[in-house]
Image (cartoon, rainbow over all chains, first blue to last red; front, side, top):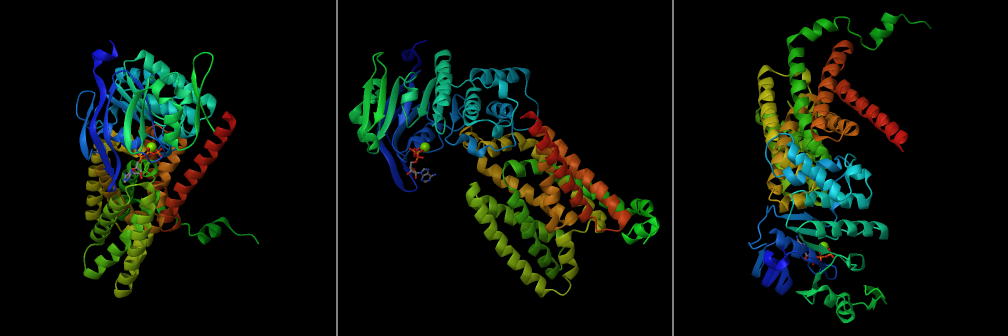
Length: 258
Length: 287
Ligand SMILES: Nc1ncnc2c1ncn2[C@@H]1O[C@H](COP(=O)(O)OP(=O)(O)OP(=O)(O)O)[C@@H](O)[C@H]1O
Ligand SMILES: [Mg+2]
């Protein structure tokens, strides 16, 4: 299936959001095609997390309309997988990675009852897909930041979503672990028919995966193909600090500050 | 100076007729009541730990104190006063402290006010001195038959409700943002949990008292979590640990004429120390 047949993953139409009585962003009109791998960039506090919450249906629009996978956003949409910012901060020492991933599948279910064999298989498959199988039985707090991030992605992935929302999955990771998470994302994006929206401050490690970007600048969200997002003028304006874009001999883009 | 063994035992209060004491009606009620509370506390303890509600649990016990003394003042049953104040406190903490950081402050503030009320009420009543002691230190040996029936009813309700909400509550406790996005009623579950916790604490205060409550509500779960992280195993284990502490504690209290709260909490503490030592050693040998 190609992206065109699938229909857009996200459509904003004149969208605006308020939080705590303040307008966070407005005039959001954009279409994210199905199957895209989109980075969401913008300075701190520009409303990137808020955009994900709009998509999840946990933050209502003040104006305009939003369509997610062809429907209005609603909490509890099983077609969406979500890894919040600071995921590991709330988890603590009391839970195994595997149990956390299983909650992504059964956490909304009332009553007791063990995992069914098919559910167990799905949990194993999700752990495998992110390369977390070998430490699945360890406690979350005993895992490194990169390992925790894999588990978080496995939890979002276990329901086999059509849309994956990742809020700063590379934060606090060193270069090698960033690279490993990006490889995981690339695998997921290639093997599954999934649209990925990933919030990030540093585009560089993600460039091999990305097809497009949503950038929040001057209080408005915009959508562009990745080639147009990696632009000196745009990024310098966006971050309010000088950014350089370099093209390597292989044709790869990369950015440097200063 | 040589001391004969019987004299030494007598010095620490050894009661030769302890076996007979264990068979008495009041002791049977104490055993049954204590085990019921240990079961309820064991089930909730896991969630107290994963939700980081330890301070709230501690505070709720103390918030119950003015309820108990106030009830004596008005001539009402102590359990009723405890329940009213614990529930109100639980709802207030659940409502004001939605995020962990807020909750610590909200809890402490409410705790401070409630303790003030407790001081006022206990200074107003002349009859309340005995109540103050039994609320602070627990009075397991004075459990009445109707109280036991209330304990049994409460434990059944608690275990039933927890069985129903265990999974979404675990999800909401560990991944609040994800659970919220997945449609779990995170806030309602949080408030419901505080009410259940208030119920457990109302019971547990009558067993070990507000000052020692931690030993029955939090310590067994913490001990269990040192041994395993599988949710079902943690709950089973903390329930068993609490029940063993209650039963052995009562036996010791009969043998040495001690107030039962002390051996119960002491055993609970010893279990925790032991588990800590074993898990440390285990971790050291793995690394
Ligand atoms: N629950 C809330 N209530 C009130 N205001 C909020 C709430 N959540 C966020 N805000 C405000 O909305 C604005 C956007 O926040 P958001 O978290 O979406 O930013 P962000 O782009 O994700 O920032 P960061 O890069 O720091 O994660 C901020 O000014 C923030 O203070
Ligand atoms: Mg954010």
